[in-house]
Image (cartoon, rainbow, N blue to C red; front, side):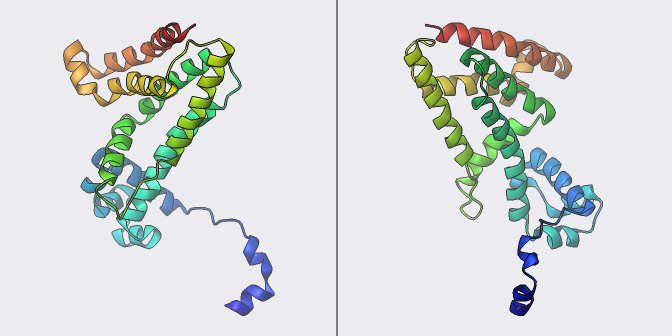
Length: 217
């Protein structure tokens, strides 16, 4: 093996192998199962059945449920947090950034209705599962960047003096509570799922206007 690498150094620069169709089906099935049932409720057999493959193939490609779950969580959370990061780094006025952040927080769960509950529940669960810790570094990075931007806006006189961390908590709370408490709010408001989703869609602009008025100097 050593001789092979010394004679053909091109192997060191080979592009990563593209996932096979089978791997993609397994990953998509895992995403659906984990979103609905979480780590503890998911079984490798269920994932294999949904993907239409033998369970042995799931183990062949991904080794264990822990590794498949970590890959799935990173993909779901990374996509969500990555899009938030794009908003935070966008070259737009801060009021528009608030509007984009709120729209982002409400649009992702529309595509994956369980994603907000999934991320929150699994981050909480990971505290008691030291063998599969979940990273939150993107969250810390987003928080740091947000605080820096708020401080700059306060110094520039475009925001009133406020605590940037508390503002971020307010934004997250106002955006995510209607998603994680959907069943409760549907019962309280007497809305079916279609009407509730329509209410959430229209709520994004109203919420952005409310927040921007509250933080204006």
